[in-house]
Image (cartoon, rainbow, N blue to C red; front, side, top):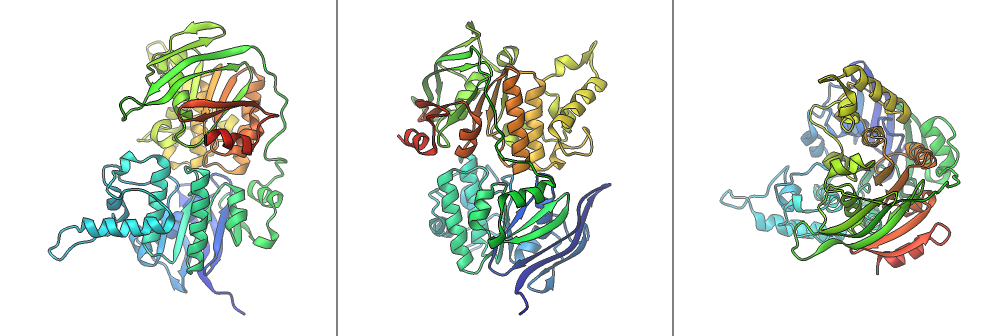
Length: 505
């Protein structure tokens, strides 16, 4: 019996100048299945999906794409959408100055009989779609007022509303909470029962194992193999992804913890928009030399704000900082950096990267410009040497340090942000979602790096929305909720259950 394939991509090759991103890529997707695409960052997953979605038009790649047996010749994303293909991109692509409903209907507004935009009908349609996926957001709200998690879910709702036969989800859960992840997975299963086919890209193997019917593994722009659900095996798939055996995802580590390094007393940070409310309220804690301290809690609990307060990027109404027992003044980022504090931010695109016409080198060296001076000018040789060294250490995949940072995959962009923090040579390193959007091989690499930094005496705070990650790499935990510390526990005392009990108090 011949398989019923809704999508066949045959011998897809995509080049950018001399760089081959995809080489003779082949993938066949059955009608109504959830088909996962696995691979390391930079393997070509997003590029392949952009080819399918028309972001890279027909004629800019080699090979053929068939949807329902018909050759796809998309000149743009609108053409692919007309064919019944919708995509939720990894990097949120929304119009922040427009409302939620205007974003949902941005490709085709609804008009009334006299030719005016029918906002009432659009709001009603949005509410209907939101209800179907369990999303509680007012369609009249400006997108710019939503947090990253809400924006991600709105873009998912947009794909659902387009009534597509094929929906591409590129790292759809990288910015949302565990509860929202579970809700989204339920919606995906429900839509699958209605006959919708999903292409699902995720670095989270537990999601893939829970959702996918089949999984195609790609490596270095080539399709390696397609595995059916009954043959899913974590070690086997990871080995195919990275081309080697990386052992356990979480490496073993024996802590080398010393004396107190940082002490924070009575840190209070006001809410940006709500007068009289604090996002961080009278928080006090300490961090030891070589310790990896985990900040656990729900999205919006105040974890990131605490780190930004320590880093001087958020103004505090009260708070004292002590380093090695001596009080220091931290009123801005420059003060923090001069005291050996470095921060990897949560949102690499919003506050982590310089994107506009900036190179990998520009981004890596942004925090160490004074060290790169030669007389009155910056030394191009010093900048290139520092950048090349960090590219090698973090295995950043780019043609050169002069490559535009926008040309890199999401995971390699994350490495660039991390590299900039490390080039600052900090004594205290604040890592806010350090492995967001990266594959399992790169995660393993980052964990080894964190351990090496701790062993070298650097004190580290890690924020992660993935509890298994925190539980496996941290030495001690603070649970944050409603801007305060609700609980503290050692590695031996901590579990997902005990952390969640404190987090939802």
